[in-house]
Length: 310
Image (cartoon, rainbow, N blue to C red; front, side, top):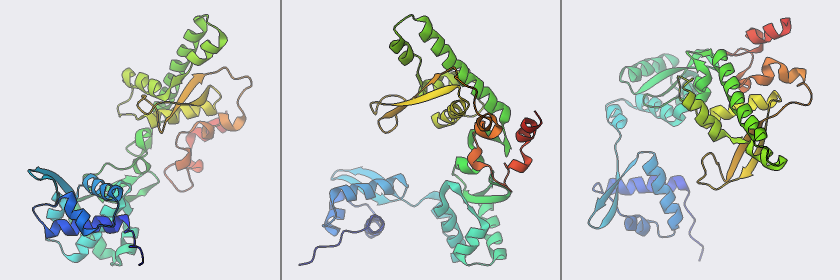
């Protein structure tokens, strides 16, 4: 007898939703198990957790145990009276997540005329179901996403942008303060008069320590993540002022990721950095976003022009 085919994750999730619709008051884990007996417990748990995290299920407690019940979102209620074309556009935008989607791509996926798409987008915006966000990658273009989503940093530029403008002075201040913190730690290690190996080890600081120091300084109007601080620390590495090492660390340790921790320390460069590293490109934290035709491009970079004149 042939073995039963293992269902795909999406099939499992869809079937769980179907079961919830069949039993509006809620279903137990046993109901799911009885309906899909060949599914492993781990697969079932992963599917349920994903549906809960996506806000498609409610978790309830009853006398018989835990119940899973389908949850109709607030937005789903608002879109209920819309026609099929509006529902289609809304679904396409929802699938794009917090990175958003251009109207051109909505047109391609929906196969609707551009005039009709523009009309639907305005209607959805007026209902506060979606919003338009300017992208730093292309200043004249807007991407659409659900109204309650926080745009991804690839769209807004993250902490380094304010109203589509690159905050070069802010980046420079962070650069200086991060280096100052590491310098102070290195000097304290040298003054400890311990053996060279202990001095070297104690001169390192984790990215979490640097992040905490910057946060306590209160020099940033926006909340910086540890990843933002690591971006700044990387510019110091490229400039030859800082070196980094990676060590094993326990998962619960502050600043550790996947059992590893990045440590940084200030160093005195043996030779001057090469011209490329000393150029604005070598220090730029948004180097990956720089391209011809974009908000940031080599042709309109004032820092590159000033560097060449110098």
